[in-house]
Structure formats: structure tokens, C-alpha cells
Length: 335
Image 1: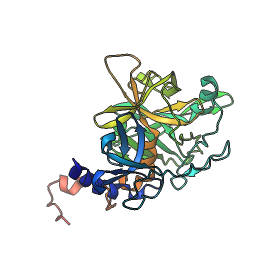
Image 2 (image 1 turned 90 degrees about the vertical axis):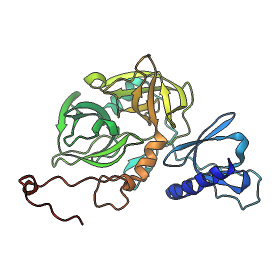
Image 3 (image 1 turned 60 degrees about the horizontal axis):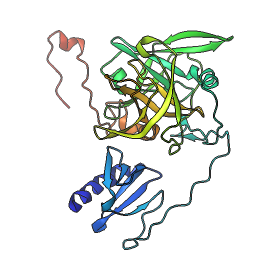
């Protein structure tokens, strides 16, 4: 058991070098793991190491160190960093080189009715030849989040935005849409609208994280079965439902095909998750990707870039066949 955890630790250290605020779990036999602690339960601690989530038995843990440097070897006394100073109420700090913004964490809760009127314009419908999904703007220049499975294998994507004008909704479709980054295993994609006449878009903030609890009220906005701008409300059933090795938010807010890629909001108006699936046989069993995973994806988007020329890109895309090759010309030599 110990040797296995040492090997896992080596891989985790390489993945987590870019994490600005990392938690450290010291294990027996001088081994350690670095990542972000997602949740602690009586017998298990769940640690996000970037490429996967590890479940670590309490019996194997010597010490937990949150958001602080790893203590010197031999120092087994638990230490925790002082809590970060909260941003002033109403502040909207930028993150990810200004790509997105986070809520300050001090916003007062509002009614779903008021929040939908304020945030609904930032939620969009993502259309492809084979189906549709939802998404939401994180940047006024046209950057938006959706699910990978919504745009998987598609070469033609359009975004339908509902602009508010004179108290009415003006539906507009944008067809010059570019895939910026995508993570197949995390089911996330970052898109950008490049239409020349595109305006500045309304955006929504991401929740700072670690504030969501079981029983908290949440609501989703999306286009289930193509019914655009549908709002469903519920509570958080659990913040750490493990499915196929990954952790999801489970919610009673109704999630159906077409909701995929849409935002799950708390009552402070911040995105706490990205809705992506439901159990087919059952009601009130919806799931969303936690916002912590979304922020990790955005902060490391260069590693997920949709770009053949990116040497760190984990995906490789073949060049499309040229017209000459299709007409029987000899193929060019491989580089």
C-alpha cells in the first residue's frame, strides 16, 4: 500500500505544479500527495490531483496541510495556514489572466425570480447539426463554457443568445464560433464567438468554492429538450457524489437533455457547477461538474488547447485531406 501511494505522489507532484493554492496530505512512510482537498468524510479524504480524484483512507494519513508549504520532514504537528482575507462585499476579482471573474463570496442571497432576470442573458443555447445544449458566458468578449459532449466531433457550432432590449428578448444567432480548449475526460469545453459584429456579452461570476453545503438551494437555467430559457430549482443533495472515479454535485433541480453545459447557480447568483447528466430512471437525480474543476480547466486551458501546433496539447488532430490528395495525387511525405 505504501509503495503504491509513493508512485501516485510522484505523478501528482508533476500535475499540480501549476496549482497556486495547494493542499498537502502527508502519508505514512514519508510519502505525500499535493492537490486540492475537495471534501473530508469520517473515513476518507478526497483529493483532486488534476487528472483524477483520489480517495485516501484516514488510516493512511499522518497530517493535512491546507494552502500552506509542506512542513519539513519529521515535523508531524498539524499546521494550517491562516484564512485568506475575504474580498470586500460586491468586489469581483478577476482570475485566469482576466478570462473570468469570481464572486466575492459576500453577496446577499436573492430570489430566483430576481436572479433569473439579472443572469438569464448570459445563458445561451449551443446548437450543432446533431443536437443542442446550453452554455454560459464567462467573459464579455464572447468566451463561454459548455460540455465537451455537446460539441464532440462537430465542425459547425452556432450560439443563440437572448439579448434584452427595451424590456424584450431579442434572439440572435452567432455562427462564427471557435473551440478554444476542451477536456474530454472532464467533459468541459471553452468556446469563443468571433463574429465581427458581436457586442459585449453579459457574464456570470464563478463561485469562490468551499461554500456550498448539502441542502443549499440552487437553480439551473438551460434548454432541456430545446425549451430555451427553462429554469428549474432544487437543493444540493450532496456535494461529492462519486461516479466512475470523479466527484459531482448531485441536485434535485431537474436536469434533462439540452441542459448539458448550462450553469447551476446558488442564490447569491454565482455558478457553482456545470450541469452535465442525470439518471435516466429516476426523478430529481441530476448532476453537475463542481466549479473547482471548471476553474482548474480554465487556469490550465493552454494544456487543453484545441491547436495542432501546441506541443503540450494532449490531443492530436489529423490534417484534413487536400483536394489534390482526394483526386489521386501522391501524398506528401510525413514530417
